[in-house]
Amino acid sequence: MAHTTMLRDLVKDVQIRDELLSILNIQMATASVLAADCDDCPLEIPIVGDEQVSFLEGRIDEMDAALEPLTSFLIPGGDPAVSQAHIARTVCRRTERTILKLAQDVNIQEDILRFYNRLSDYFFVLSRKIAHLSGIKQEPWNPGL
Figure 1 (cartoon, rainbow, N blue to C red):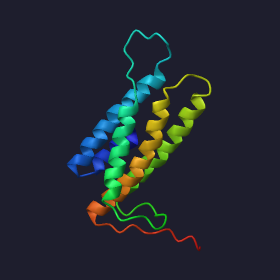
Figure 2 (figure 1 turned 60 degrees about the vertical axis):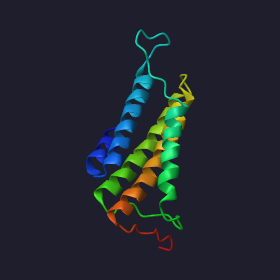
Figure 3 (figure 1 turned 60 degrees about the horizontal axis):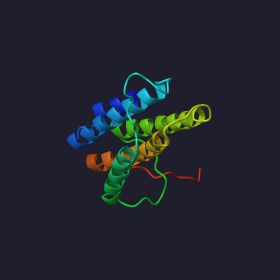
């Protein structure tokens, strides 16, 4: 969540800032679900479901359609917000792996895993969108080193 917050603080685009606030609310919900250590909790625990996953998938598709097709891997960076989106993406992948390990021992809402899987993809496409909006040319990876 902290990296999503930092990204939100770095981004100037109001729509992206609003999206990131929505994502932060979903991340808070997932944190409360994962922290709850009870099957019959006295408090209502949020449900993270298909609606949240569909939200991310819709945004990924919408942003991707407005960007040039990828022809190679990209070197992350070029702007602090672009770099922060990549940091959020990698931390998100690590979170997904941690939740997957936890799911071996306790029952986890399946959509939480789907959410984090799609969220890391969202951050990658968002990094490209931020670069595009900022007029930053992203460097292709040169695998021939």
